Image (cartoon, rainbow, N blue to C red; front, top):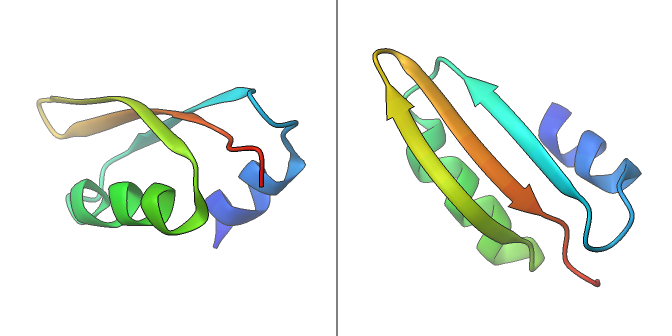
Length: 59
């Protein structure tokens, strides 16, 4: 929910970095991007931290 609200504040084409510690984000964030038409630019895991770069879609 917090991610959805933050992405909503962005202009189309802007990029958001998301840092998380919850392993379920590996499933949830790609689905979120796919469902809402955003582009997942990068997805990395280091130790127990998950990092994502999301470009807001035009929609």
